Length: 510
Ligand SMILES: Cc1cc2nc3c(=O)[nH]c(=O)nc-3n(C[C@H](O)[C@H](O)[C@H](O)COP(=O)(O)OP(=O)(O)OC[C@H]3O[C@@H](n4cnc5c(N)ncnc54)[C@H](O)[C@@H]3O)c2cc1C
Image: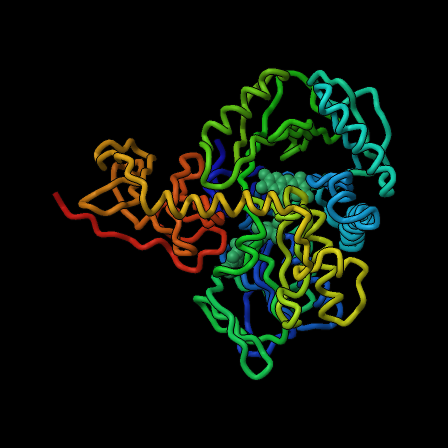
C-alpha cells in the first residue's frame, strides 16, 4: 500500500503522488494583513485567492502543508445534488432554500471551471453524468421524491435506464453536468495563482489562539503572531470549544483505489442509497486507471476503521474483478446539525471573524462557494447565499432530533468515560502497531507499541473537551469520539478542534 506523510493520516490518497504544492518562502510576517486565512484546503485557498484578486493582502496559515486535511483525502466529485437531499431541504427549510442550494452547486462548478480555464490548470477536470439508484421499495419511493424535488429546485435530472456500475438496481435517476477532477492538481494551481499575486502561505504554523486588539486580530501560531483585519477559519471547526463543536458531528469515510482485471471501469459518478452509502468513479493516475469506491462512513472514534476497510473491499469484490488494491485511505468530514453548512461571520456581533464548516461529503462545492460568500462579505458585496448559510441562523425545529442525538452521544461519552470500569489489558498484550487505552498503576493511559516494539504512553484525555480517545489502527492515530480531534501516536494534534497535544506520560521502567 502506498504511503506518504503529506496528510493528517498515514494512508496515502492517489492525489498525493504529485507531491506537496510549492508555496515559496513566507516573508513580511510582521505586516498587518487585510485577511488572515487559517487552513490551506480548498476552502482556505479559494477564499485567499478571491480576496487577493480583489486587491487584498492575505496570508494563509496552515498547521501542516497545503492539502494536509480533507482536501488531500477527498474523492473530488462535483455535484449539484447533496448528502442533504432536496426533499429534506424543502421540508426543513423551504422550496426557495432548495432552489438556492441547487444554484450553489451550479455556481461552484462554474467557479472551479472558470479558474481551470483562466489558469489553464491541467487537473483532469471532466463533466460526467451522476447516477443515484435504489435497490428496494423504500429506496425507490425516496428516489422518486428526490427526482421530483431536484427537478423543482432547478437541477438537471431525469429517470434513467442504467446506473453506470455493475450493481443491480431497482430504479435510477441521472443528474446531468456533474464533474470530477484531481483535487490536489487544482489546489496547486490556485496556490500558484495566489502566491504569484503576492499572497503568502505559511506552512507548519499551528494556530492556537486569536486575540482582538485595537480593532485587529492577532492570530497566535507556534511560529509567529500574525496581525490582520479579518480572520477566516477554514479549518472545519475553529480551535477550542465553541457552538460549532455541538453543531457539527465528525465522520470518517473510507476509500479504495483498485485496478480491475478487465476494462469495466465506471464511466460516470454513481451513488447507492444505502446507509452508510457507497459511491463509485474512475480516475487515471500516472497512466493507470483506478476504480475509486468509497463509503462505510461512521462517526469518528466510533466503530472499527479496519472493519470499515474490510467491508468496503468485500463490497467492491462482490461486483468487480479486482487486479490489485493500490490505495486505501480515509479522511474526515463534518455533518451539520440541520443539514446545511455554516458559512459567514462566526457571530452576528463580530463581522471580522468568519467560518466555513459543516460541508458533509460535499465540500468541493461548499468549500468553493464559501470562498465566494466570505470574500464578498469581507469586501462588502451583497451575496445571495449569506442568509441561507448564515452561522447565526436560528433553526430550532429543523434537525432538532439529530442535534439531540449528536449531543446525547457526547454526553453519554462523558459519563461512560468517567465511570467506566471495564477491565483493560496490560501493556505487554499489545501487538506491534497496536494501541489501547489501558489501566496502569491506577491511571488510564493511551498506550501504543510501534513496529520496533517501543511502547509509548499518553494521557487518553482529549485536550479539547475531556473525552477519552480511541485507537484507530488503520490510520495509526488516537481519535476522539466526541468532536473528532485526532492525534498521532506521539500525541501530536492531527486534526479537529484540540489546541494542545495529548500529554506524554513517562512509563516507569520495570
Ligand atoms: C473520503 C471523503 C470523500 C469526499 N468526497 C467528496 C466529494 O467527492 N465531493 C465533495 O464535494 N466533497 C467531498 N468530501 C468533502 C470534502 O473533501 C471536504 O469537505 C473538503 O475537502 C473540505 O475542505 P476544507 O478546505 O474546508 O478543509 P481541509 O481540506 O480539511 O483543510 C483544512 C485545513 O486546516 C488546517 N488546520 C486545521 N486546524 C488548524 C489550526 N489550528 N491551525 C492551522 N491550520 C489548521 C488543516 O491542517 C487542513 O489542512 C469528501 C470527504 C471525505 C472525508
